[in-house]
Image (cartoon, rainbow, N blue to C red; front, side, top):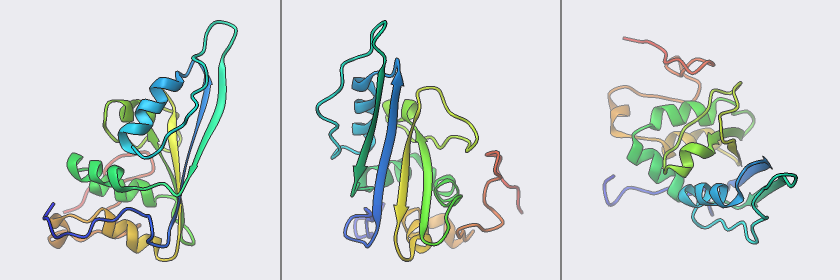
Length: 171
């Protein structure tokens, strides 16, 4: 990205960002914490629960408020998945509020993957809820890239991916 470009984070921009994830059964708290730290390095789920073992499954929910989107948005730009991100993050946008999930397994590998809404990916998800005035415009700005000067995109436009994750075709 150009050096002078505005970098959005969601912090001090009038938005509330909440991240939640549920650890259940054999989920490794250490692995989930590492995945979390890859995309949201300022979040620290200390103290970590014990690792699960036979007869002692893990069952805990982590909730973080005022989450910075800085590293997450940087990864979206580096991985060049900005149009997919706009579609996935705005899919359930309504009344200045949206909720979307990202794969914990992909995050463990330092990647971002948006699961198909009706599917639960192996390894679980981080669920993000963003709320604030002008959220649709913020999502468009946060995922902007130079290609949009040639092919403009907006929230819920006719170029958005289908509900099953298939790309829309257009000429």
